Length: 286
Image (cartoon, rainbow, N blue to C red; front, side):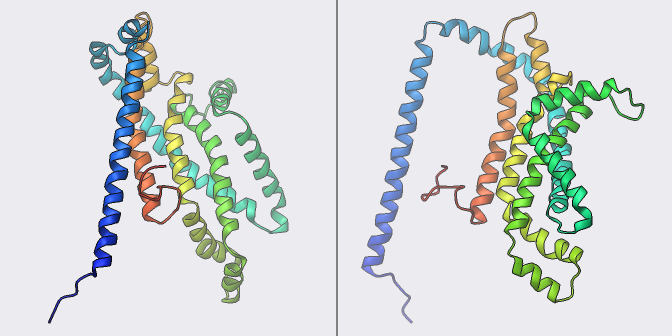
């Protein structure tokens, strides 16, 4: 029995595509090298480069402060994970409450609208300051005064408002026929929401949801304004008195070690699930 062999035309098409792919990769690599070399040349030939290198890129200072900043980064990661999980759950609940059509729940819907409008409209840094310094002024005995807790609370308040709008768009993207079919099968309104609408809505908004999680990872560094000893706060302490800003570069380097792989993982996940826009036509990052 003879094995199947592609035709000459098919082999030519395959060879042509492979050649185009190799040429595209070579052009992209060459242009990247040229741009990087040009940027490096502009940097090292600038009049203040020597002073900037001593102030921002001191290798000895970088190695010396890296362990302390890494310990502070662990606090940022804990805040990110806890605040992210709570924000996702709270955002979903807010979206469900806002999309409910029950007349008796109109006050709840109005309250959710006010909540979302406020915390989407106020900058996250301002929310951190108001929560971090305003709540302790109330002297509530049951409220923890820890800066990490107050910072996490402020991030939850802000990001739950953003996530609720993302979830709401996903809920509204579910076709009404899905709800009608579920109701016709005898499901209650609550069962329809829980078993039909919410699962589809979550799948529809996964790309936007993951992007917000990445953004929260970076904003976790803002808790340093409340005095939490995180990576940025440790860097500020190291800079004080020395006027050497290398610790800030070290803190940025550690944040990049977390955010860049996370961002690439999100892009890969989106591309594998078939969402357009995560990658270009040739598989490259847009």
